[in-house]
Image (cartoon, rainbow, N blue to C red):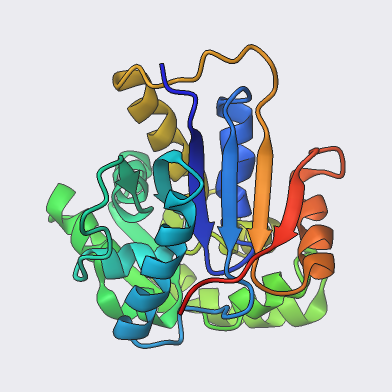
Amino acid sequence: MNNGAIGVFDSGVGGLTTVKELVKLLPNENIVYLGDTARVPYGTKSTDTIAKYARQDIAFLLKRDVKMILVACGTISSAMMHEPIFENVMIPHSGVVLPTAEAACKATKNKKIGVLGTSATVKSQSFANAIKAIDPEIEVTAKACPMFVPLVENGYTDRNCVVTKLIAEEYLDIMKKNDVDTLILGCTHFPHLHDVIQDIMGDGVKLISSGAELAKFAADALKKDNAFCDRQTEGKRELFCTDSVELFTETAATFLGKDNHAQIAKCTLKT
C-alpha cells in the first residue's frame, strides 16, 4: 500500500480529462494536478523549451511527495521519446503515447487510425511510431490542430459553437477522406471537444481519449505494484495553476463538476 498522491501535469486545463477519469477509477486516491496555464500552449514551442518546462513541472510535483507522475500532455509525452525529461526520477511515470497507441490498435477494424495533436506532437511522429511498432500494417493519418487548445482554454467547447465547428471541420476533412475508423485525441485538451468531433466524424468512428487511457494505465500500474492507498474515504484533489485562479476554477468546475471539492491554488514554478 502507498498513501502518496498521484501527480498529474499538463500545459493547461486539458489534463483535467485524466483527473476526471482517475476520480472515477480510483475515488479514494489523493491527486495533485498542475496546469501550467501561464505558458500554455506547449505545442507551439521548441523541443528544448518543452523539455525545460516539463522538468520544472516534474520538480514541483516531486515536492508534493507523489507516488506516481502522469504526463497528461501529448506534446510533453512526445518529447519524452527523445528527451531525458525524467532523469533521476525514481517513482513510476508515464506519458499518454504508449497507452493510447495500444488502445487505438485494439479498436481499429480497418487498420486506418487518425491522430489529432499539437504541432509539436504531430511533427515528432510519436503516435505514428508507437502504432507502427505494434502493427506495421496500420495506416496512420496525423493532423496538427493548433487552434484546439486555445479554444478549450477559453471555453469554446459547445457542440453548437459555430466557430469551433468550422475549425474542426477543416481539421477533420483529411480524416474523413482517408476513411479512418479510429481517431486518437492526442492532446488531453481535445476530449473537451469530443461532441464536436464526434458529430463531424459520425458514430462509426471510435474516438480514443489520451487522458482516459493514461488514467487506465495508472490504475493498472498501481494494482500491479500493490500501491493503492488504504484510504476508505474520498481522496483529496489539489489543483494548481500558474496563472488566473478564477479562470482555472471556472474551467475546472465545467469539466470536473461544481461539486468536485477540489482545492485550487496558484503556484510559481522555478525557472
